Length: 250
Image (cartoon, rainbow, N blue to C red):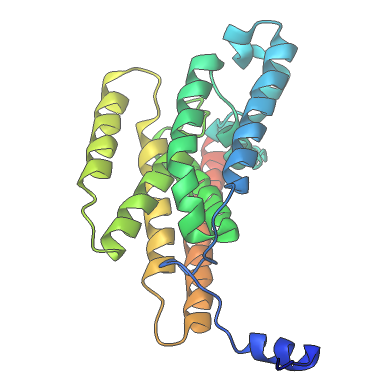
């Protein structure tokens, strides 16, 4: 039987292309680690706020919740961590359960298609987009929750389905229903949802539509697009914070 030296086999493997998804992620099957980690982090933060408050139904009175909730005047006063931290807070167990179930259902497929790092980047950018919209349109609101990120992933699914030439109608119906709910029920941040939706859709579109004859170049452009969307969201947050700071005399 013929034999191949180890070095020859290794050199041959270098020429093999890694199988990738439509979004440029490495094609793999298995556990969606990032999605499960995000869910665990959200449950952990909720548990901390519930313990601090002494009441799981009123965890919003805890010190951690007060320090992390998105309140535009507080951001203007220098608490910029709120624009990310608020995405891991929830008003009670029902709010948490609904968002985490949605993340579980939507996030697994998105992670497998985008790849772990790109998926996480789109998730964070969606939080930033939601926070930016709240900073501009809901100045006096106190908001919290992963809904902005979840809406961003819904937008990501629409972009993915369109790229794969499949109908996005079921996802669009879900988005429409949730927008109506956002209008109908007091206390739900419509602008946080829409900001996350816009950011997640744009960032994912950048991943999907920058691929060309050179996959590596396309992946780089995809990351650049994510960076641009993130930079725009951060710029909006900072500019709005500076404006509020001047208006409030902080």
